[in-house]
Image 1 (cartoon, rainbow, N blue to C red):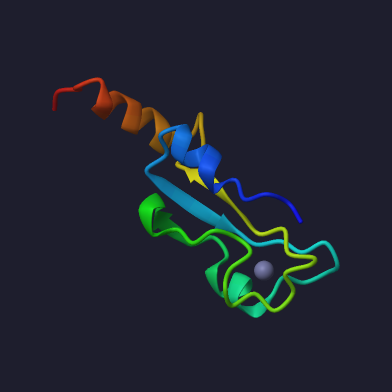
Image 2: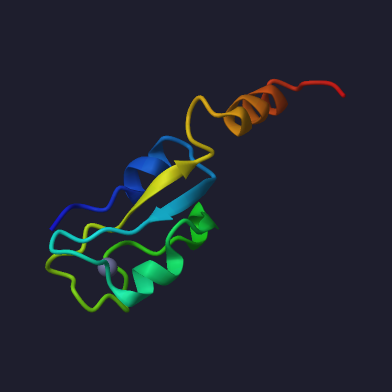
Length: 86
Ligand SMILES: [Zn+2]
């Protein structure tokens, strides 16, 4: 089982994460498919595999930081954090 990336994201200072479903054997569990691509405040993100996961042995669900580094949203966020003026 792959260790959750959630802790690393917390340490990296991520505020929002996006759920990325995955399965080593084929299609992800139903709950993962439901959450796929969903953005969640990191303090509400549930460690993977999810409690509802029906295939924890093959579950490789994880979270990525949102916005992704280098994206337009990330640049905007950095700009805001730098105290950008309107
Ligand atoms: Zn799962």
